[in-house]
Length: 213
Image (cartoon, rainbow, N blue to C red; front, side):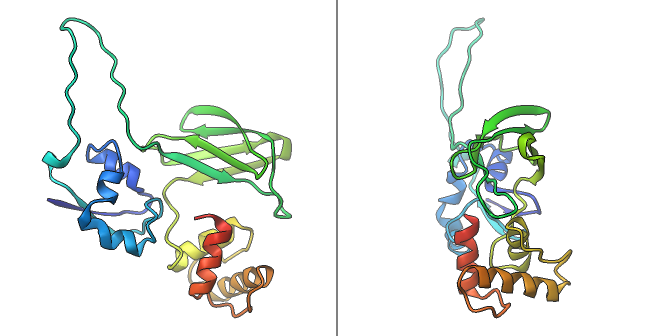
């Protein structure tokens, strides 16, 4: 058996790919990873550096044999859970940038995508993808994206990232506790909550709901 310790920027699909699994659910649904599933609210897309993932032995990996004539070229398609990059684009007033053409760059590859009526973009990506960039030419908007870098909402780094992405400046580091408190207060005020400045469990749940993950 093996245990993988999650590093910054890693996500489950990439970890599964690293160990030869085409479907990350083989790891996520393994009984020995049940405690991790509970701790991460059954969300395999948001892991924290230091999380430990049990890796099954080799015989538990998917194996399949296909027949094919020798001396011939054959094409095999590997099926597994599709990894999707999902983004919701909003303007400075918090309104969705709807039905708008965008340019999504993943590595050196460009993909032309269009937001839906809620400002959403959805596009499949490789489990090895680490960075992306989204351009919205008609709005003069550009976003650099780090794939797999969002920490869970119950840690300060995860709270800061969500607040920043929603437009609430939460400081330049976790040491900027005053700015983080102000950002939480502003978020609470705009979402009908008592402005305590503390990102307590109810505020975390609201942050998850507004952010989407």
